[in-house]
Length: 225
Image (tube, rainbow, N blue to C red; front, side, top):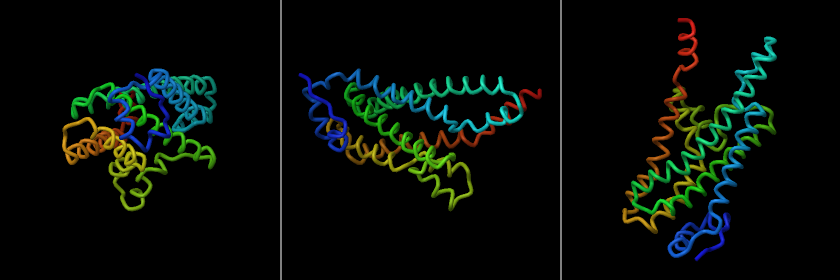
């Protein structure tokens, strides 16, 4: 038995979606997944073409290395597309598997939930991209995250990047996941919410740790040797 999927209808009615999935299957689920993947790849590609987070390449053009600059931009675009696929795959397949193992909820059902999660994350990035393209410049921080606020009160880069990974969308995602998963899992509400909060917190810690690593200095040091 199949049921018609409506993104905006079920976005704020995850319990209704969970109940529908108990005895029905979403129509054309794979098609919707590929649509989200295509949108994600296009978004990441547009951000790179516009120049978001590619400021370091501008110096090549300014110094007169035109051909090198073109090659670097092409490589950057390919990297952005590959990163978009890794990003989407991680949140769709990786987080689905982690939640499946931690909650014992059927993997196929969690995949439907994570389709919402990936869509929301891409919408957040699209909103930030549109905003930056309108004002004509970009920063390392998302206006929807707690990073800008943390930068006002903290000087430690690790904590600033940590809070930058936690946003209003993160809270919305946790709320949606909780509404959906509590229909299927035997975990208590307290344990479930701890798991759902712990996942983005751990990811934020890992990203913040990676951001403060002096990778460029390591590369330059390796080339000097």
